[in-house]
Length: 139
Image 1: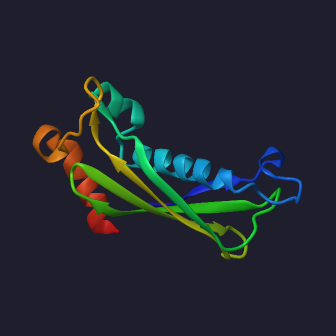
Image 2: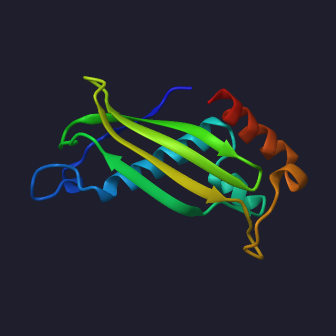
């Protein structure tokens, strides 16, 4: 699977001319959404199936600055999957130099859309469980 790419927009920068730190979390979401699209199971498909996957935790480590006009590539890797919880690791790299800019992680739970209670994909959505398990095993 290829990785998500993002061209830095001027509005994403701060007074110092670098990308504001909050944008990394947004880019993680863009990459995660793209990853699900690539898995052939979009957020909308999940929600239509009665599943929500909220973010429980998000973290980022800023290694090198990203500036306006640069294009970055965001790599996603499923590093933990239990069928109830999911952890995704991210790397943001410059597409020209391959310089590592940011690393991060998000943690998620699978919830029933109506009750907001945790669900087990292994028991209630075996097909989706298999898709995520395959991603986890390939990481």
